Amino acid sequence: MRLAMTLCLVAQTASAQTPMTPEEFDAWSLGKTLDYAVDGQVYGSESYFPGRRVRDADTGGPCLDGSWYADGNAVCFVYPARDGTHCWLYWRDGAAVLAKPLNAAPEDPAQRVTPAAQPLDCTGPDVGV
Image (cartoon, rainbow, N blue to C red; front, side, top):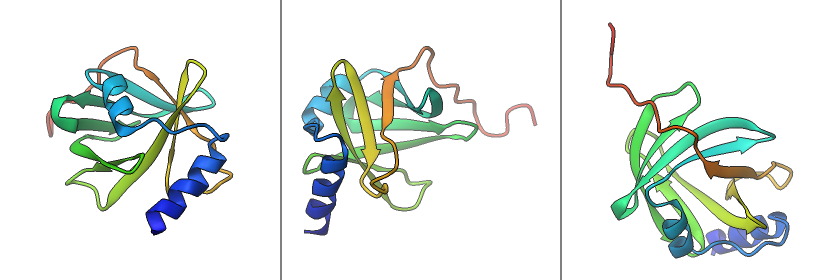
């Protein structure tokens, strides 16, 4: 119930756009590396693999392997190296894809999600040490 209410609130703040279904998100993201940005500033990137597997790299941070699952229209990410579940709504605005975490404040801007210019740079642990 709480997730459903949160979905409704986030959907309303998402410029009244219709959320992508998880199936649409999977078809759009599969095999891609995507950048997440606000006002042109990239905050992180993710690569999407078969079986709803994902690799996340926040700017300046390590790469984390995880997975995602559907919860209604939300896409929920789980990373064993990070606490909790992180659920997002994705929607199209013309040719653009926008996203916002379910726990974001209404005034928080949506993130523009675009194909990355390069693959993730995930080096092994302690490289060069």
